[in-house]
Image 1 (cartoon, rainbow, N blue to C red):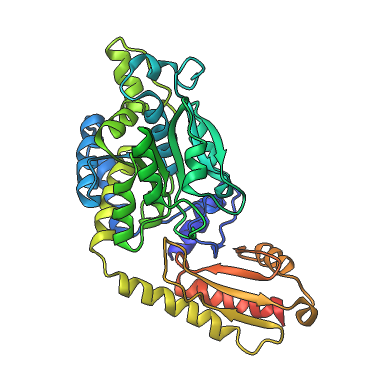
Image 2 (cartoon, rainbow, N blue to C red):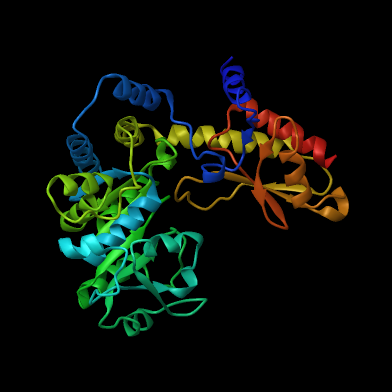
Length: 383
């Protein structure tokens, strides 16, 4: 019945809903808040209006207490938290600099060093506030000495992408903290998906001066995130957020750049409730459910010529729970990309992702019924 209701509302606007077998991906809407979180969001929206600064600060206190950091607040996604955190590293509490961002041409320090081999799609988020990225190291590694060699008189911070999978050939997050302290610069961390194991979530949150997380990964709405870390830097980020823009106008101050990063009161409450749920739920039970989905897909595809499945055995870091489907196109007569396209073109569409060798099925947002649909459609495509 719920599926029909969803289909009906989308159909009113000519939109075709489908099955998300990619996981918490932005292009498909990111997340579906569980009932407990959705109920809290609805209640917050319908219970009346609030002083938004109080809302952000009180929920931020709860988030900071949960993560063991000095301060936190809800943002409109991890990218907003990275951008605002970068602005904090550039301007601190200097109101003239806050009012000038993103034009940092007159700043004494406006450069962030970044490990060249960590290059990724979202590095641009560090620069939205006017920071200039300076690559250090090589494509296949970076030493502490190479990072320090790239730090100069205009360096304001280290921009760090924490994936959870960097090897010893890279400067680790802990080493980056030490480098930043030695040189009197800040450490701005993109840790968007690093919320599991819980011990990792809290440890990473406490290392950076400002750390960004994507709240969609623990059951909050797609468009939410967390900015957390050391009080002076997070307060600077807070002052440069959309609320700071409004409050600065009331006080006759130069307005900061962060007006586009607005959140809704339901979203703010949703993050706090989702985080509380994440830290009190039974994660062994959660992962057992995800494993049962992966096992079902693996068993459902067994025996198809030219098809093998693999369930990654390494310890889970972050939100992604996948089963890999390897396809020998010489036997099946189809490449992985052809199968991906065929699934996406079906009714309903099934959206997956992969490379030349395999299709990665993300199971964390699939229902049991959808798991069976994925199995049936894959068998049809591959036999």
